[in-house]
Length: 268
Ligand SMILES: N[C@@H](CCC(=O)N[C@@H](CS)C(=O)NCC(=O)O)C(=O)O
Image 1 (cartoon, protein in one colour):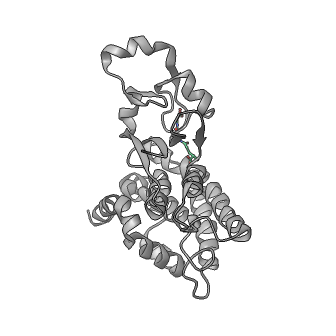
Image 2 (cartoon, protein in one colour):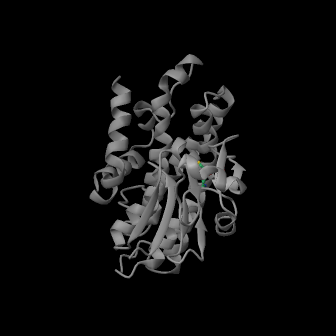
């Protein structure tokens, strides 16, 4: 039986934070979801499910306006969903009885680590390591916020030079910190083993890399992707760490197809 249910659009690198952690510590997850546009015809609920056209009228009380990533679109979010998920966002996780909602992908990942009974120490070996992991998760969220504005603007064909410049600055700050943390020859971001900090870095960098699929839209306004390989030579330790993580079976299970698509896009 699953120990945590998660509803999300798919694929979603932020969901990988939980699925990678679950694979590493043997926690059973149930994931429900579909492609972003398909979620407009889903009922957003603990019992999230596709809403057939014939049932949509009966759910009209659940209609709300989407904001982030679904801007202006109508979404079917039940009152119970909003009671459990007050910000109304996905990924949205629930305890097995649906009584407790957990939101924000970093917190959902932490929930998985707290359910770990395998002794994997993904959330650190003591209070100091756990707190250092939290530090990485916090800076990742700051980066993620700027990245989200930029990526959504790219998706909505509304990117500006200003948004690109802000994303480039956030990227350089984030990668600079990761690079520094791995100096001179550290294998992991915290302590001597893989932790939630590494998983979070991997997921956020993967999501950001999605900008590479919008190369043509960027070129049209005289810009280039920020995460292009030659630029990341500035961050050799961070990129080497990312590349090693991408080959780890627990990471590749989620990321391989997504990353292959990016590489194919670079060659096109
Ligand atoms: N920082 C959040 C981001 C969650 C988020 O913003 N989700 C958006 C989709 S990208 C959403 O669910 N929007 C629903 C709405 O606007 O109604 C996380 O990491 O989980």
